[in-house]
Amino acid sequence: MNKIEELKARKDGLDVGADIPRYARLGLESIEEGDLDRLKWWGVFIRKQTPGHFMMRLRIPNGVTTADQLRAIGGLANRMGRGLVDITTRQQVQLRWIRIQDVPEILDRLLDVGLVTLQTGMDNIRNIIGCPAFGLTPNEVLDASAVARAFTAMFVGNKAYTNLPRKFNVGITGCRENCTHSETQDIALVPAVKTSGLDEVKGFNVLVGGKNGSGGYRVASSLDVFVRPGEAAEICSAIVLVFRDHGARDARNKIRLAFLLDEWGEARFREAVETRVGRRLETAGADQRLARSTDHVGVFRQKQPGLNYVGLLVPVGRATGDQLLELARLSEHYGTGESRLTVDQNVIIPNVPDARLGQMTAEPLLKALRYDPPGVLRGLVSCTGVEFCNLAVIETKSRALEVARALERKVPATKAVRIHWSGCPAGCGNHTVADIGLLGTRTKVDGKVVDAVDIFMGGAAGPQASQGVKVLESVPCDELPRVLEGLVRFGEFDRVRRQIRLLQPASPVAAGFTVQE
Ligand code: HEM
Ligand code: SF4
Image (cartoon, rainbow, N blue to C red; front, side, top):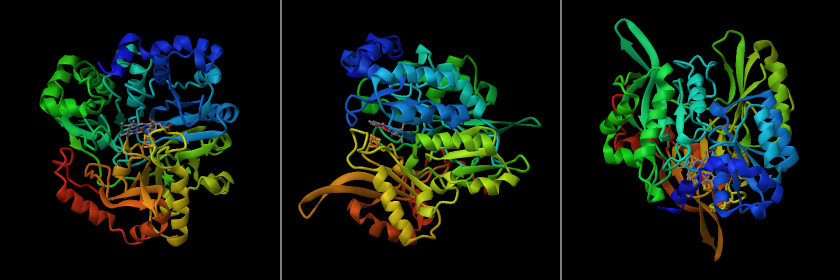
């Protein structure tokens, strides 16, 4: 048994919840070694970078938040987390500099507004991601948010799901525009239509086994299953439980669902899921995804006449507690008090009437969180980097901003470019699916070791997903404005993607898919 398996076998991660009040009273030194890891089941992560302090990760299903929740998070960040709020690429929020003494109060305050931190790390089902424009965008086949909520309710706090072999990522979307990088999720439900007699049923095709880490990128493959919205949460659960019971539990880097699929093949895996649910499943329906993907930054018409959703760019996902408080106010004043976080680390305020758009876009906060950012900032995503992550090789967030601002001066009018930074090969910044992906490394310049990146080009999400290819190696970060200017100005990203598709083996997802625009 590896160390993590032993840890889970001795005591369930959720059980550390009963010890949190005692640890808070007695302080950091009192936390037993195994429990320091088990606290991650409660979203409480010790961080070497902030000695004696923790990062806390808040679960935000589908990225949906209310004004009360934003106020609670902003207030907690201001009072106990040095005013820092990070929006993550799983539509969650991370707080920093948290003391164990403050954890019970934080958990209580979050619970008051309907938020939990449970199972946001380690071998759990992570936050369910989904299109943040559900129910608003005319481009959706169906509103999938109820499925994300139903599935979340099934597993959060339920020990049947807290000892998985490894982490488990799920994306559920009913939109045609591929904003949630479905192809790298362990399970992705993507919009599909099944014809049954004269009826057309709207639901999802099921993709499984996508990943970005653990040996690298693998595009989720089709399970050849169509699920109806009412049964979707049950099928997701069955897939997770097949993985729980049959996934490998030895070498941590060869455990993700992808490895079980590679061993069994999709057909055998499908049968195991059918056995668990006790019935035959329908074969896949017609894939409704478009070839393009969207980022939701800007002002967009909703399908409801006279209403708009306004997507604001939060540069590299880093906000302040005060900005969250102000976002809460704006969402109530101009919308319906709801905000939605996106997988690009941004935020959307829905339901803004036409007549109020002018006033809203003149609000001071929108000078910092812009709805009309320059192209080089618009698609900017960054992982945590050396500031708070002990695996990081380089600093990412501040560098990413610095480079983007320099590029903005050089190429102010460029179209949107997706530039993603990962601070180490774990690849949490999704650099593999960006137009320009930057992966942290170190290199020597004049005998001195400096931050550098390997540069990837041509990654894409969606049914024609492609993994970016490395085009430059060990480029010192100080040289990036100069090097990237050329790529941003003249980069033929679509042509590169077409060529990558010719070179990379046809993905099982793309097979049988016809481009619909
Ligand atoms: C061995 C592989 C990996 C390791 C060790 C790892 C480690 C970490 C760590 C330490 C953090 C938290 C940093 C902080 O304090 O902010 C983090 C966050 C995150 N990582 Fe990874 N990571 C791995 C692979 C991946 C992969 C492949 C992805 C998918 C692209 C990913 C997505 C994320 C996301 C989205 C977050 C932000 C928190 C969240 O919303 O879940 N990670 N990862
Ligand atoms: S990619 Fe590396 S540096 Fe960035 S958050 Fe993940 S583990 Fe940390």
